[in-house]
Amino acid sequence: MAGPSNPFGAVAADYAAFRPTYPDALFAWLAAESPGRTLAWDCATGNGQAALALAAHFDAVVATDVSAEQLAHAPPHPRVRYAVAPAEASPLADASADLVTVAQALQWFDLDAFFAEAGRVLRPGGLLAAWTYSLLAVTPEVDRIVERYYRETLGPYWAWERRLVEEGYASVAFPFDPVAVPPFAMAARWTLDQIVGYLATWSARRAYVEATGEDPLPAVRAALAAVWGDPGEAREVRWPLFVRACRKPAR
Image (cartoon, rainbow, N blue to C red; front, side, top):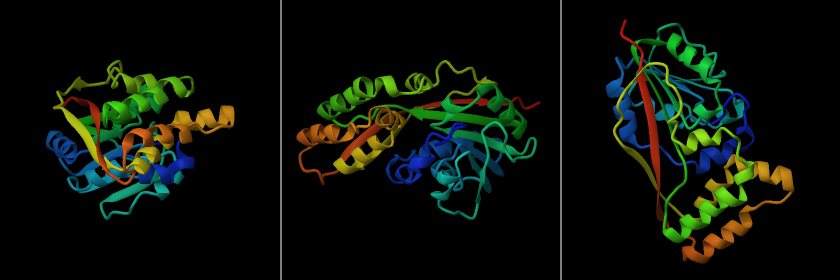
């Protein structure tokens, strides 16, 4: 999901194909906590994954992203309007949105400018929510290979903003009073090729290839295949989901 520097436009199709989906319970909770259900703004929507889920609960969703390539892979929906725009300058009117969401993208923003924009766009009592996830969990054997790939192979190639993801946005100073969030998790059933496709979308892998001219993923796939068993067998994959939320004052 692209931020101001648009690091993900070139792999928009892979993002649409291989990124995990967020739980329905999260969107039901966001809608219940919003002061109304007239309009939601999904910022840095990428391929529209969160926007489409929000459309089940809101009359209208404005879904923006700086990457036209990402938006080209977003499915149309009668209640979703897509627009190319940076996080810090949306096309929404003042005090028009009941909810502002950011899925797995807050780390790419100019936070002061974005929080000011969210405050402008939110109606009194409106909710701002951002969430992120880090490493997946499958089995101890698979997890060790993925973690080694993440920390040792790709470690030097992650952007510094990645630390905000690893800490679950804990150090980010949100602009309004915090809202307590119940626990949420993501889950999927994936084959070996789906896991490898997901690992291919990591931004540090692209940085590694650009810096070295070599792709580290074939070796990782071979290591995973050695512990996976039948490559066509789908296994449960889980990610912890870290959600931060705050509410604009009602007056």
